Every structure is written in C-alpha cells, then in structure tokens.
Amino acid sequence: METTPKSVLGFLFDQERSFMHIRVTMKNSRGSLESVLHVLTGLKVNVLSSFSNVAPGGKKGEWSAFAELAAETTPEAVTAALKASEGVLDAEVHPSENGLLIESSHFPVVISPGMRVLLLPPEMQSAMFSRIKRTFGSGGETILYLEGKAAGVNGAGITIRYLGKDRQKSLRNSSMPFMQTLGWGRARVLEHSDDFTHVRVSITDCFECMGVRSTTMCCHFMRGVVAGVFSGMTNKQLEAEETSCVAAGATACTFEIGEKG
Image (tube, rainbow, N blue to C red; front, side, top):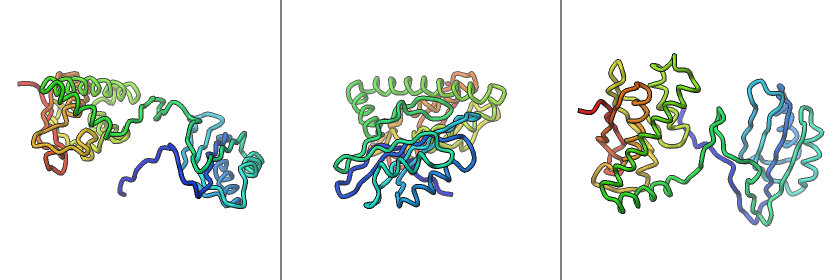
C-alpha cells in the first residue's frame, strides 16, 4: 500500500463554512468511539481530521477532531448528544469564529511512546541550513554534519532505550523507519556488512534538499544523521559520505557509511 500524508490538526479557514473542534473523553472500552461516530453521523457532522490517544492499560482516552457543522445543527446540540452517548465521560465543542478554527487545546506535540517533537516546515529548516552554509562556507557544512551526527547518535540511544539493547542487531535495520515517522525522509538500507560497520543507505523525500538545486552534494546534516545512527548502534566511530543527491538531479540521496580511513 502506498504511503499517505499523516495529517496533524492545525487550523482551518473558510468564511463560507462552519467548523468546530470536538474533544471527547471516553472510557477505554470497545464500542466507545463507535458510539461517538454514530452520534455525529446522526447529526450530519462531517469529520475532516481526527486523532485518538489511549494509554495502554488506561481506563480512559481522548478523541479529538476537526469537523464541519451541518446548517441545521448547533455546537450546543452536538455537545449534549455526545455527553449522553454511552462510554463518553465528557465532551467539548469549540466552534470556529468567522470561518477560522485554530487547534489550541493540545500541547505539547508528542509521538508515542511519549517523545515530544517540534513541528517545523521543511522549507524553513532547509533555508536555515542554506544560510549557515552561505555564512560559514565549508565550515558551515562541517557544523551541520557534526550536529546531524550528534542527533543520529542520540536517536540510536532513544531507539535502544525504548526497544531494548538485547535487540540491538535487529535495530540497525529498524532504525531507518523512525526517520519516516519523524518526517525527515523515507530511508532504507540498501546493503550492509555483517557487523553493520559498512552500510549503504538511500533516502527519498529528504527534507534537507527540498526545493534546493545544486551541482554538488548538499545533505550534510542528514549525512551526519546516518553516520550517527550506525555509530550509536554499533558502538563504532563511523563516518558517512553522500554519493548522490536529489538536489543535484538524482532520484534519491544515497550515503555510504563506514569506518574512517
């Protein structure tokens, strides 16, 4: 199945439409969410985007959604119907104002299992990196590489901490999907030695070179990230070189990771 974008509730604006932000606290039991959706269907509420958060083993969870309000329905009626629904502990409905709805009920942004993340448009991040390289030249490229490597080592440590050090060898392959989870790019291991001290990695949709055109390799931060990930996973001091780059016309950014010299 093809990958699809993961939508994060942000804001909606359309002066011709009526939106609302729905927050429901439910019992962690089968049928609770189904009951909520049944209520909204009956009120002709069109759910546009939603997410749920239920801690494993917890007694309750939350469902949050952006939705469009039907002309004949009021936010008060939606709230009352939800609160009367089986399995619902509490409900809030926040309507848009003059067509504008901003999600301000949830903070911070967290991805399971409980890691806080910062949402930053890739174009903004890429522009920041470009300014560093323009200002410091090759020194800027080195700064980005070292910062990326530190991030990769840290990411490898987080992976091991959550999934267990005894699974370290298998983690060297599973470390790549975490980049996609964070929105950095779609990475995969093309080949590797038995001890993972030599690895070839391909990354498509790399955020660092989005909108960039160059005659040379330009993903210095991501080059550091992949070097750091496998350095952390193998407890070896590995380095990386970028051998192809989307910014230079390639179909993917490719990196060779190995021991220096």
